[in-house]
Length: 375
Image (cartoon, rainbow, N blue to C red; front, side):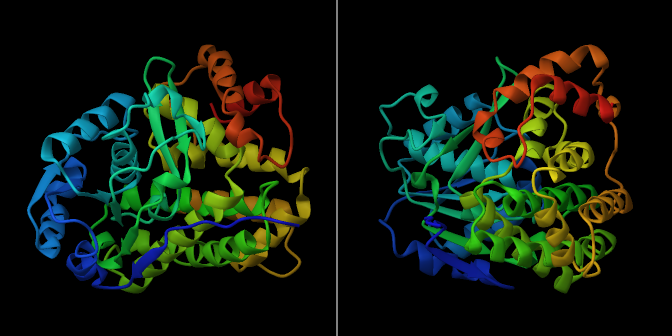
């Protein structure tokens, strides 16, 4: 077996890590800093903490919606140019961090964004980037992937390039202590699925398996505690570490069909990403077990289940965990009806980047059946 492993080159992890921001900024050129965040993070004062820790002139761009659109990324890139920013700091969940990533490569690019979607299609490096997650979910701070919503096609699209890795990630569990329960639940299941899908991907290797196993253990054994008591520092720290390790795993092994199915329903019905993944998890992981039942059983052991666990036991555990943290179970709760299924299935089949990693091939007919199982 041969493989290449990539991740963010400098990572500060731990309580109070945000205070390293000023020192890290000294490694880059002088000039204004653009902080990219979202309205919620701005409201609770975390962006203000980042400004204080930076110790430099900062301009804040916070006009970011969940599942950010291509237009949002273009507007953020314009803000970078207008500010003449020498560094971009993304502070928030996946939406803020992905927007910051794309803005960094768009700010001074001559290449249109339409040519960037896909794998290693970006021609030029971007503005230096520091990412600071405030949720234990996407792991975007250690991936070379950014996802945007194409509102015309009702589909999420990915830019995958090593040029999207930030120069630095600052991963501070203190910033996650005030995250609402619903966000803790959705982002936590997203992170768990990153680990499980990376572990069962056709592109998994010994390094990604090691990362994914540790991530699965941390998340499976701390998500309920973080959900029940958001001020539980140990649980929050474990969740953030798990999400980061899962990000390192899936950035190299890839995620699979659960995420592929979540993209169309997220883009068209604006179902929160982690919720969309969690709803689709049961039927798709059950479908996928035939592609590699041993790996799915090993995932259960990694989560702390008994040594002779089966693939079905692993999926049952994950479904119970999602139920315990009050994640919705049905697409109908978000307005999805049977008449939407054919179009959604067609959308899934366009997500070839992720389906190529899936341990079992699926057809459009399979996709329609799997969507209908969770209507």
